[in-house]
Image (cartoon, rainbow, N blue to C red; front, side):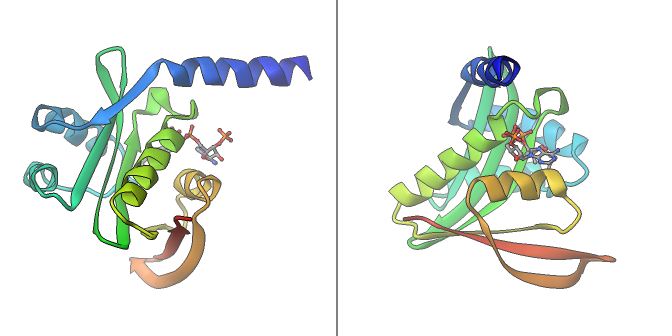
Length: 161
Ligand SMILES: CC(C)(COP(=O)(O)OP(=O)(O)OC[C@H]1O[C@@H](n2cnc3c(N)ncnc32)[C@H](O)[C@@H]1OP(=O)(O)O)[C@@H](O)C(=O)NCCC(=O)NCCS
């Protein structure tokens, strides 16, 4: 019991050291580097991130530990329907609750902008991402067989109540 408490407490302490903010154009090189280190992430160009930062429908949030960006989430939407399109946490910073905080902030942003549902799709075999989405209350909403070659895409939705 005590061990469980200490583990949980340590995780909260570590998560508290991480701050979230809207991404700036100057964060794009680091975002690209995080993305390139994560094979399972969507691989976008710097120009696509730049466009996303400049369009009102897009949102990119970064997580910072000290002054170092250690993760990001990117998505877009207008009105009721939003899509969470990419998320990466630096491998040394994983499993400390940062992904969960970024997803929650993205959901809060979408809701604030009038969103009622957030969609996403993920490789069926990406158990880390699926675990993250399921703990953020996304539910399976469909499947695209063979979308990633021999692997299906699983579609998720989260109702923003
Ligand atoms: C998916 C990813 C963003 C998760 O980020 P993270 O900061 O490690 O996630 P969190 O620490 O917030 O984890 C929240 C919950 O997600 C689930 N989860 C996270 N990593 C997991 C793993 N490797 N296996 C199973 N469940 C996992 C757990 O339920 C976890 O809660 P717990 O730690 O209390 O058990 C990270 O693994 C990553 O960057 N992966 C590579 C990029 C990628 O695949 N992105 C998704 C593209 S669709």
